[in-house]
Each structure stands twice: as structure tokens, then as C-alpha cells.
Length: 211
Image (cartoon, rainbow, N blue to C red; front, side, top):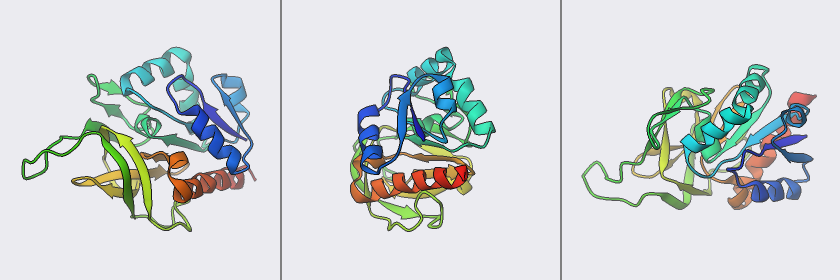
């Protein structure tokens, strides 16, 4: 059973439909007791980091997710959900994140190294480059194109957590992971065959951990 964490800031419908297409059993809930009964969780997210963390703390879901990860149970963050896994963000002022992965979230500068402007947000299809091709999320997939929409980018404190990158005037961490905590900066549920394959890899990983 996969639990989609509903804290009011996620693409619940699109993620749910993707899991349905993959034949996964899932629930969408903000109820901690129901989520606790799941084998793996997905933390989606669209919007501002600061708002998301305030909601997670007020609802008690931040503490729940911390206990979940400490219990070595699988967690996948998507888009803003991936950024929340890190230590902090500068969006709307400094905000502490969940701190499961080492690094911080900063806004794209909007200027190249040569001083020329480039478009922010990073929006549309971009190609992945695998740094850890055997990682459970990307295993047995080819590094094709996936769909991004984001104005803030993760600056990981160690390259060990970066599984795949995309190029947007520099390397953008696109897939991250450490132990049983994973994240995708792009929307796998909107990224055609490749994105669906990665979601299926996560479902398979959760099932293997359960067994």
C-alpha cells in the first residue's frame, strides 16, 4: 500500500491517476494513523516551501514523517516535496526543511556565468544525466526527457545523494536519494514513459522492502 500525503499542497489527482495506471494500491490521506499502515509514502508538492513547512508542522505531519524516516520506511518526494526533504530553503526567507537529506534550496539566479539572463522558472522538458544508474529509482531505465516546473533548485551538500541531473545553466539535481528516502524534482506522473517507469520502480522497491 502506497500512501499519498495530503497536506493541501500537492498534485494529488495526477499522482493518484498515475498509481492507478500502474496498478498500485494506494490511499490519499492526511490521517497519520491511516498513513502509518502504509508500506511506502509519496510526498507531493506544488507551491511555496515556507507555506508547506508551516502546514506540515501545524498538522503534526512533519513529526510523523520524521518518525517514518527514522523507522527506515520508504519515502518519495515529488517537486516541492523533494525540496522539503532537504535542510532549508531561502524561499520567502530562511525556512527549515525536514532535514532528511543534506543541502539547501535556492532560487535560480536568472543569469548565466557570462551575465546573460535566462528564463526562470525552469519549465518544460529536459534530459536527465544519470550519475547512479543502478539506483533503485532509475534502475533499468534510459536517461530521457522529463517534465520540470520550478524556480528554486537544490544545492546538495554532498554529491552522494544526487542520482541524476539535468542541465539548466549548470547541473540541476533531478533525482536524489539516500537509503530509503528518494526525491524527483520533476513530475514523474507527467513525464510520459520514463516518469511512469520511475514511479513503478518506487512501487517495486516498496514491495521488496515489505517482503
